[in-house]
Image 1: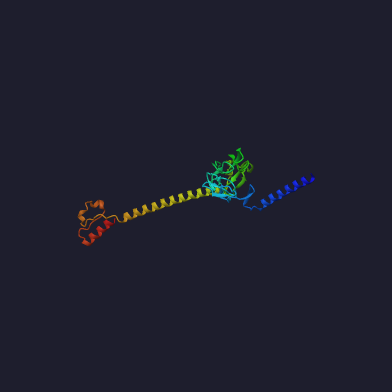
Image 2 (image 1 turned 90 degrees about the vertical axis):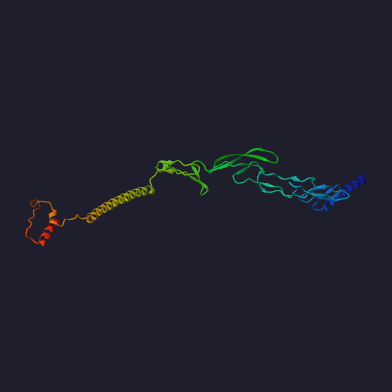
Length: 274
């Protein structure tokens, strides 16, 4: 009996070693099936016919829209992931990778669909899990402020800064500030004084221009009057003394009856000069 048990144990041990030896004898791209080392189909293919005593494994290329990423003994390829926006397109050996364009957010964990990012400057989307299963997790989004209370988001420096407290500085508040702009205090500054000086200078220039215009106008009018008076045509003077109809008493002149023509001409010149 002891010899029988020992014989059975030796047979079992031999079978085990033989099985292990057969398994180890299969290559990296093979697997043991029914005591045979069957070849695996390479990536990009699937099993069309399994190996048998008469033939090895027969493989076939994956159809369009399908892939196999690893050596396999599957009877079909996996279906490629469909995307609303592709980061990497599907090939026969790799699955597609999905992403979302700028201004959109992934609505699930594989990013197969996208939703519009409705957050504005100074806000950021907050993601919440809506549902999940073994393969896909669904998301929803809500907008929240990037900066905390009494802070604003500086677009130029791309960080948060504290709002200016006008009341603490002792100035009235002109603009209270918001998520993207600092508060504005109503305080005098160099700019206000500069504006006042500019107004005074402007008024002075206007008054000076007006005074210069009036002076030039007066000068031109006076010049025109003098010019007109100097060029006014003289009245014709009668050459005969008899043409004067004034009596001798009114003229105040005593003509010498026996005077010469020269005397008459002199008297006439004196009358004209008067």
